[in-house]
Length: 242
Image (cartoon, rainbow, N blue to C red; front, side):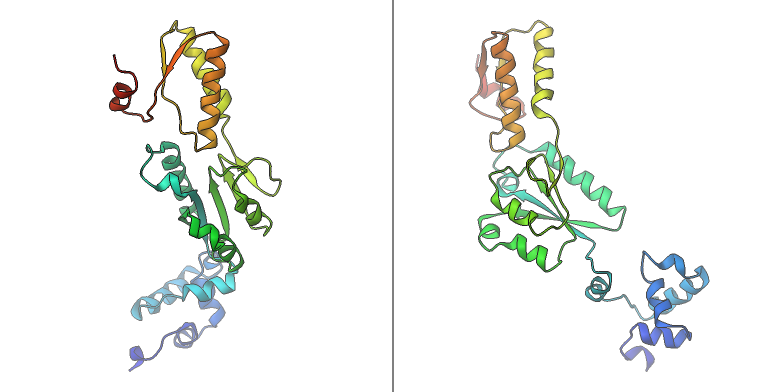
């Protein structure tokens, strides 16, 4: 029986009396427009009948890309022990929406001690598993970032490393932004100020904390710094008991 035999592009082309190149182009998102709609419909009908889909590994070889991007995030950001990082959540959502619109998908990868010890980042790069890498919150102390950059894949550092010319970067000015915010608080007449510090484990957190200290000390405004961190009512109650 025909449907019991192995189905492939060559057999589909033979059934329709067209070239294998035409079938291949029709099944490629990037090249489908080069095949007429009528021809694409005929090819789709045969593929649906035989439940055929191109082998993704074979497709990647011919395309020389995987349509996958890796988002590398420090393990502590994903541990669940710290407060929720709303910035990271927003970044992940934005990345996924933007890439998926272009038929590209993102894998979230925790940078763990094993990941670093076994140099998984080099395996990912050299095996062409990913077309590029996004780094969240990595500082200059993360030496693997510079090692990865030397491999010359597309790498974008988000809220992190700024001094490597081989990396593209997207960074908010956390220091200036927090300075403006604290000055606005002072301009409103507030002088009894309590500070819940940002996490010092991230560069953004350190910059924001530095901005708070600099502005308040310059204004000679005394402030109480909470020993606990967080964004909820319980944090405020525990950090600033009456």
